[in-house]
Image (cartoon, rainbow, N blue to C red; front, side, top):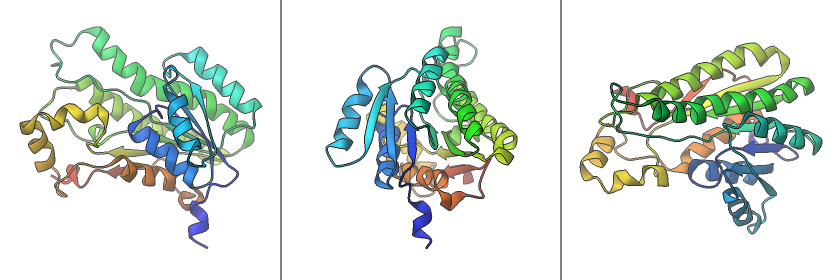
Length: 255
């Protein structure tokens, strides 16, 4: 009975930033649970990722999407709706531009991170969420960060930290507005994850030691450890959850 709640057979999901890293693992997890998953990312990068999953027998497709392009987001939402609609949206696309002290950070560096990490989540949630509301059901999962709870160190990245804190409160705001209309909105807040975006840390022994040393579990996370929580939040197993920000951080924020 209980395992059935995690199954997504017959449902359609879309994951942004799905070409690699956490996004790819999320797409894999949702497909493994039975959903048809639309992988999206910049250019044609999602196409190769989708092929890798399709070659393993998963029901997937792909689309090019820049989440900062409002017109493109709306156009894709319209296309997806015409093809059968969407049950699950995972707003995963995100970037980090670190080591820019706040007092010298230029507008472009600030705005680029805010546009992708926060505005992109809003544009996608607005376009796809509006259609979910019309049908009276849907689940949105946003990928926030433990950086929305704490200030990362030693790297200086006020832009990233602010963007993820914004994602968390946007999640709660949409959950409050849409809960009675059948659409749940939750977020996952990961710790430092072993992805290409963080690979520079492995080459910096001091920073790596700092990150691991600040984690009670004494290690970084893996993409699949985030994906499994997203699967839970997207599924009926989390049917009473909305507005929740679930930390997947190895205990990092405990200290």
